[in-house]
Image 1 (cartoon, rainbow, N blue to C red):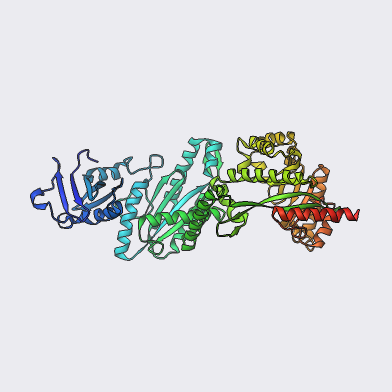
Image 2 (cartoon, helix red, strand yellow):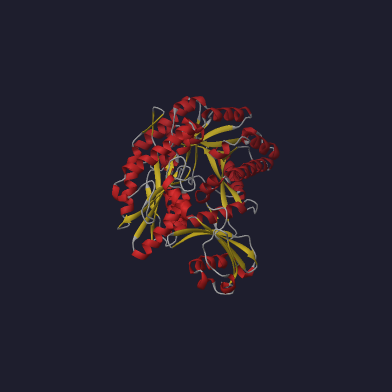
Length: 558
């Protein structure tokens, strides 16, 4: 861009030209005395519409705000860049630069202004410029265009294991493979001369985007996505090692998904994230239902951020019994969210959001503190002591301050550590095994018991059972629900119980709903059970009554 502006104009919010400054190198021949006071639409029609749009955004109700924007326009084979600023309560300042020569140089030489320095692909700025032109062209010709948002799956793992240099080489190889292997009619080229041609760009990190203008039907975009996924499935050779990478792709289509650039980009990104949720290495079209789902997620996130400080969470407790005696041996704390409109939200509807946002850390701490305090209250009321089980998220467990937080919760509540049981998932342990072992040994040294939740559904391994100080296994409900009729489930449950007992580990079955299930588990030698047959999750007052009734029933049988 020239350091000296081509010209500067100041207009009022009603479009009247208030001031004009033509610079020394300007070839614009305008006489201020003649043009001042006239509507800008008469004097500079190419500037009028974008400037008036800006005025409506920047000066709502005449209120001064810090606001700036820029755009480009072309006239008589010349290109201009315009920067807009708020210059008063009812004034807009437009500074215009002639970029004709510089834009041409950028396209010919691969200037850093428009080119990604790593892959030599067009960058975000050039891509947005071309997308804007493509939309205008498609509107005139009544054609379709498709936008593909490509995000490499688990790319961070490459950087962490092979280093950032290897990661950069992989990005270049991904770009080359897509560029050289797509069929010619896709017109996916590094640099282009026509504003309406398709192109591929790198828009940051491990994200790429492809603009397809040569499609005749919406389904054509899927064919390109399938080919990209197939191409990327072949191994890359990086530092003499085979590296495998996959991609998730989101598709938005003009004009069905949107008719403006910003929304098309956003919708492709939403669709890409939906592809991630579908298991990655796939593609998804944008749909309004996906957008609605995203908005609902944001709404839940915003409500969750306020829920803790507003005391909207509560704990329900589900008892665990000794199968041989029927005595209550523990309870599991289960969080519920009671919203201000009295709608009770179950964990599956909001826990994933807390983990994605990091809110699981403060919420998990609240759960632990509340559960410890409640168990101590029950003991103070004369109820026979039992274990309190608290589920711990993998994100929470990996926090550097986790051990300190547990210790502080026990100290503040006055609960003896031997009555606290922390429940972890298999994946939580196997992701960071050495660090997990250290923390688990510290917890065991404090007298806390460790339980493995949902055993059998993850990467069950004799190795980690041998290495980790695990004292309790919980058989996942998926193996219990059909145990009365499915011989495979029966064999699995018997094997888990035998394995655990050989390692001196207690076994608790969850999801027990029928007497037949309970009878089989008793015959297999399972130690404990929980489920709706015994008692559903209930509030502390109801659980107090349940425990007292259970204690009376079991003592009367003795």
